[in-house]
Image (cartoon, rainbow, N blue to C red; front, side, top):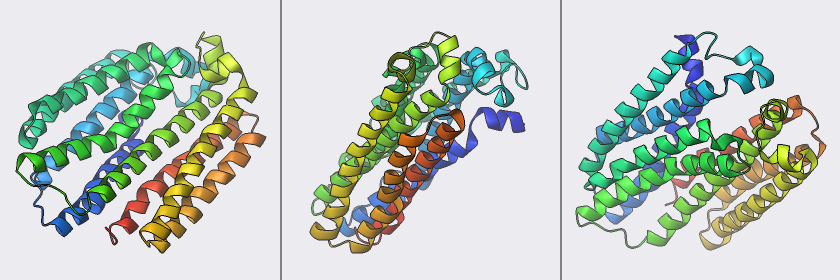
Length: 311
């Protein structure tokens, strides 16, 4: 049982669930209350939506480990689960069952939201994660984009389901419409950008195995030094965007303490991340960078708790 949980990356699943619940209850709901809007999806409906997202992600982790046995024997031999503690057949069966349940639940919640077509989202994401694990993980940039897109979709699906259900009931967000869009797109781009940076760092961490397996990841194609420069550029772009967001919070919306939180807990660690990228040279350094990026992701997500008091 413990090995199955490791296979499904349960800490990452907790972060996904936390993000989706914070988006709903600390960003959307305060704005809905200010507008006198009654949410259409029940707490149970939303819990099912989150559950389906978690199942799709868990299935993605299972199929990724299924296809990565050869690479993992080089990159992380002590962490191999599939083929060691869990058979490849069981991993594939688990992947299939999780996806089927997620797709069924997705169509049910789509029906409750008023647009059955939204159920296709889980199908598309599950197919993308399959293609990523089977083929595109080994392609320069393509695999990174797929994972980053899937990460951003965890926020987008909440917005799609909640807002479409409200529009279908004849309710609309008026006064805070701009604020809502600004906040949602800020978190979507933050999720995409930090995920992209972390995926490239993980490629650096797995460089040895990827080389021997014939993968064409960014570090394999352009080398470690150029990859580190690329990461510095990406992180710098994200810092500029976060600085603008903090400035907007402080001077346009007068959310001073939220701006201070962003600077201290998100932007400064990002600056430290850039410094560490420049001096990192080995696998353990890249492992630290990956964990630091995850900390920044969590810190950014938790900022929603503060924002809920202002929207």
